Each structure stands twice: as C-alpha cells, then as structure tokens.
Length: 276
Image 1 (cartoon, one colour):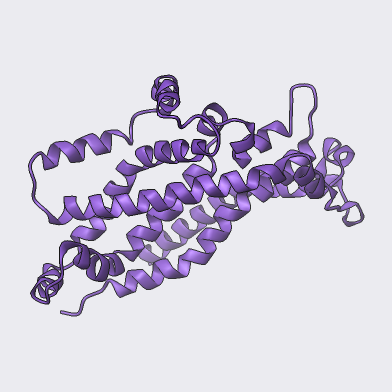
Image 2 (cartoon, rainbow, N blue to C red):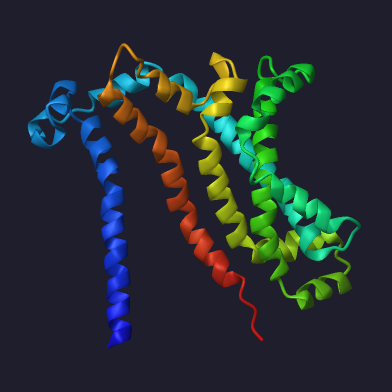
C-alpha cells in the first residue's frame, strides 16, 4: 500500500511539473496563431475565428529564412565532428592504457566547466590569425569551437558506455584479427548506441540554441537562426506574435530529432545486452 502511494505521489508530482512546464509553450503557441492586437489584450480571450498562420509567414519572410542553412551547417558539422573525435577519444580512455591518461582525462573534463565568455575575447584574434574569420571558413571556425566545448561532454558520456562493453567480445574480435579501429567500429559502437544517440541529441540542442558564439564570431551572412530570431524584435518595435511564431519554428528541428532518434535509443539500449 505504501509503495502504491509513493508511486502515485511521484507520478502526480511529475504530471504537475509537466503541466507547469507546458504553460510558456502553450502561451507561445497561442500567441503565434493570433493577431498582434488580440495577443496584447489577452491571448486567452481569442476565438477560433481569429486564428491565422500569417505570423509564421511574416516571421519567415522577415528574416528567418536566410538563417536556416547556416544553422544546419553549423549544428550538423559540430555534432558529426564531436561524435567522431569523441568516439575515438572515449575508446582510448575506456579501453587503452597510456601515459598521462588521468591528466588528459581531467583536462578534457575541465572544458565542461569553463564558461565560454572567459575565452570569447581571446578567441577572436586566434580565428583571424588562422584565417577562420572570413567567408565560409567561418563555419569551420565555429564548428571547431563548438567541438572543443563538446569534447569533454562527449568523452564523459561515451566512455562510460564504452567501458561497459564486455571484454570477452573485444578479445574475440582481437582473435579474429580486428585492429583497435575494427573493434571500435564493429563491436563497441553498436553496443554503445544509447550513448552515441544521447550525446548527439544533447550536443545538437546545445549548438542549435547557441546565440553568443553565432552573434560574436560570425558575420551577418553566416549567423544561425537564434540571431535571426533575436533580430525579429528590437527595443523600438515589439513583435510578440512574430517572435512567438519564430520560436515555434526554431524549436521544431530539435524536437523532431528527439522523436526520430528515441526509438533508436531504445533499440540500441536493448541491443547492448549480452547473454550470460
């Protein structure tokens, strides 16, 4: 009886927290489909006859459309590079022995706690010196910056999954002549799929939602959607309806990514089981 009450209280608390979390989401969604005059008098007074998609069209045409390609280039590039380098580094830390292993692991983890604001100003002259502050090379520059900040998270998350792979499977692969790259590709990565997917989702959301680096390191032609969303509203022009519509559009790619990869996460989780 006590256990049932505990479970009921837990689910009740989570449901209440979910409803509270949904309030700003529902508010933004409601404002995005109502005329600006209606939203300022109270969106909850609006009727179905006033619903409109004009806010989405205007937000798209007034600037968001030009930021879509840069956002996907930056985000997908950062996630792919972080996954590749993170998988290699995680395998090394989880399965290999080498000098200064603990020191290197500690230094990588420190990137998780260093605020980006601390190195932002010193970072600008380095990007200019390396030629990564002009033209399309700006994409490469900001991808490298995001990869540097995501390296600690990648190693921290994936190395735990890599360490859980049974040594017997790796030994069997070595007996079959597999190199370390072969063991990583054919044994470790399929079994560590939950870790890869989890990191990919977290890194995608982090990079996709970045405003500071995109605003500081990139020119107008290479800035991401977050900058375009911020430009929809200025101190002299409040456009709550366009900002809400833009926010809904900006949040859709991470949401769809999670929905698409959730089943792969569950499948990978069960695929990692090893029969005794």
